[in-house]
Length: 253
Image (cartoon, rainbow, N blue to C red; front, side):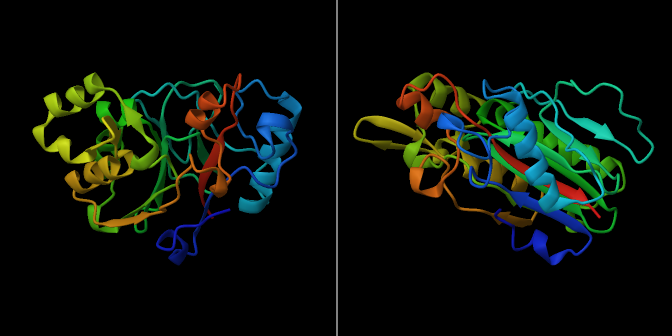
């Protein structure tokens, strides 16, 4: 489990970015696959989620996840929210509930954890290029600000994801971003006649656009095999039929 230095300063939250180590899954899912939507054995995924929760919270029996679709939708769960539907579609979760771990699953996309130290509100975001492009980060921050948070009190951790050196994209992808804003060209680099996109720094720019200054970036590339993370792009290159998912989690104590 990898922790953010800045988030670790707060004693009233628990958090972590998990790689693929320490689980029970086999084969291409070896070993801490938390992908409830993957083709892995369901029982193994359940066991892996229990392994994660034991490292985060002894009081809670499960981790709250949503069905991720690369959207800009978020879900807010207040202290008094009673959860009936466990198959909600969203790509971000916000809550002020205690002992209630929230998480997202990634395999190259960017996991983002947020905490407001005074309002005692947390959020977790699954930010692939689609969600980031659609403004999921701004939507989450704006909601937090409208509900008692302050920019100066929010600390953000950007988790492990694919980095520019391994993120090859097509010209129409680049044009889509530049059409939205000319300044976005700084997130693209040409190498050997190929185009590479810097997703983590695009995410960081979105946070800065929203005037968030307390940002911690975990500079670990999920595509590089040596870092031991699940990677959708690496799995595709290896012609695997599926891939595991890394979990990133945060909870108020």
